[in-house]
Amino acid sequence: MLNLVLFGPPGAGKGTQSEKLIARYSLVHLSTGDILRSEVANQTTLGIEAKKLMDQGLLVPDAVVIGMIESRLEQHKDGKGFIFDGFPRTTAQAEALDALLKRHNTAITCMLALEVPDEELIRRLLNRGKESGRADDQDEKVIAKRIVEYNAKTAPLKQYYSQQQKFHGIQGLGTIDEIFQSLTTQIDRYPA
Ligand code: AMP
Image (cartoon, rainbow, N blue to C red; front, side, top):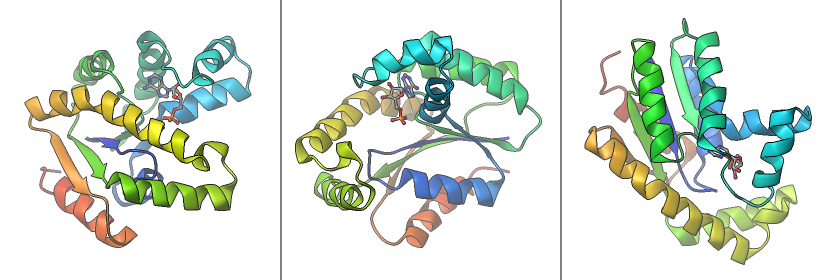
């Protein structure tokens, strides 16, 4: 199985590159943010509780997201692999993910982190805000806070995957195809 963790700050191009990676390698996309948003939309008990935290920009408890991932791993255990997006976000989640995958006789292949200078992220997000009307993409202060938050939260995970020699920083500047090429070059270094 090919199991990728894709990381990147807001505006790094994670969504675009995720779609291309899923198509190239036939992976199942698991985004905890998307799953939580659908729970909120369906007004499930989990969704109602999670919304209170999400509205404040706080993380949902580890046990909740780990449980969500566990059930989906089970559903797709015969697939070619997964792309984890927005998960793990804490060391506890990364450890739980390793344990879950081990139970399925597989493991994380690598973590790919898209790296883009802060000024470029701010420029891209402000542009996206103009086009999409998304409130959190229109205020430079909010954007800056999200970038700082991302950096603070990612640091321990970078260390976690570096210790396993699975962390790869990927330059997130250039055209969509150039960045995709850098990602696939790295992925293809691992045995299929
Ligand atoms: P995202 O779309 O990945 O930015 O996630 C939106 C919100 O969902 C986050 O701000 C958190 O409140 C929650 N969330 C998503 N993924 C996780 C996770 N792995 N751990 C905890 N909370 C999460």
